[in-house]
Image (cartoon, rainbow, N blue to C red; front, side):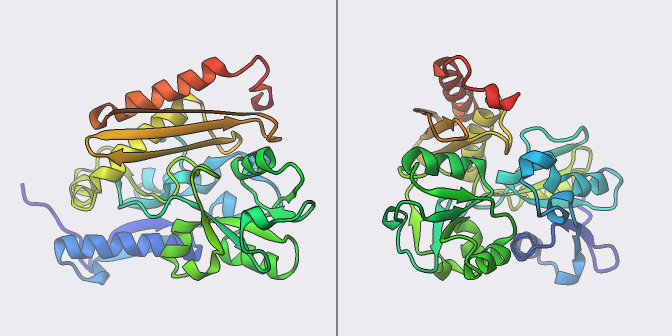
Length: 315
């Protein structure tokens, strides 16, 4: 059966949040589909959706519902047919999709590291005791306090541009951003340095773009297969299985990164108490085809090592 390609008269509707980074990711998706099928830009319509997570900026995410706050409205529009596909930062995605939706297309992963951003300090190691670090990430807060309990951490929400303004206003001495986001915005120069995973293991799926579709939409399935990056898919299979086994959300200080090494996949994982007082780490290797099983195994080993009371903060 011939694939019915989108046209300017009947464009494929791509859902996205409205931040500059979210739009850059939607435009990258559109450009890849245009190139894969030799289609004009007018054959696609980028639809901006304001989510609850975008509207509520004065409270930590854990107080208002977690990761689903950045996806719920978009996914509702997909389920009612208003949108055909949706483009997401994978580190924002819950491990389970709503009934009727699925994720099986990933674009090539960008640099997964965290970026150290400051107006006056060159490196994380150069921070003096008592200096103020701004972050809304429970993971980054816990990792930082585990290594540097002498620092002060304050809440620091907002998109890249908002957080840079807060630095200029003196709300904090430094902050962390994702290197991937800065690269996609052409703002790599903003980072004083990229932080090695050995010093700060990144969030699960950081740097990866996922494209969501309806399970029953065979046209979207065929279109997205043409732009799916298989190596990124293997890496995220390990990382998201690891996250799922830990029952992870953005209320949970969890870090994880999978890398490909020949025919093997190497996964490192970390779980922490929110105050940074304790950190458990593990790693392992497996054949690429066993990526998801490796993620599950690493998570279960960490859970087995966690002392009684380690997860009391999740209640």
